Amino acid sequence: MEVRSHSTARPFRTTDGSIIRSLLDLSNAPVANHSLAEATLDPGDQTRRHHHRVSEEIYYVVEGRGLVEIDGEKRLLEVGDAVLIPINAWHQITNTGEGDLRFLCTCSPPWTADDTYLD
Image 1 (cartoon, rainbow, N blue to C red):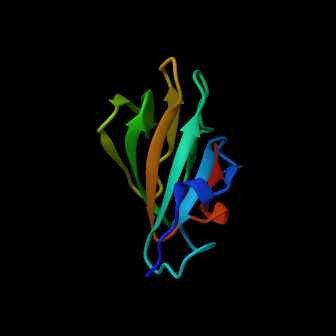
Image 2 (image 1 turned 60 degrees about the horizontal axis):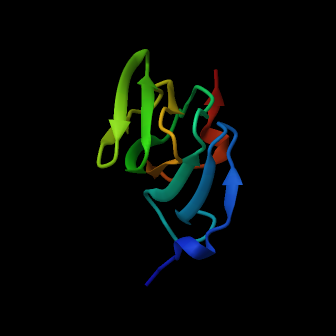
């Protein structure tokens, strides 16, 4: 059984600019088909626009509000919203709230930094 605690996941900044805590991914668990991380953006911050050539992503907002852009289409997100980011879709998320924007990120296949291509 693989169990990881949020409190022991070390945060790091990805190439897209978000602060990530990897909960279950290739670096810490024997995952085969997906990964799970929590991302945080400070108020007013945004990720760099990017895409993934291999991984499909899903974001699920657990705190705050944000504006997500996927291939030119924009949508406001709030707690409880989930959004699908298809493979090769250019995307960016901006914290539009007054507090942190926290969201869970799942990737299939598992996320790797090598699969992040910046605009």
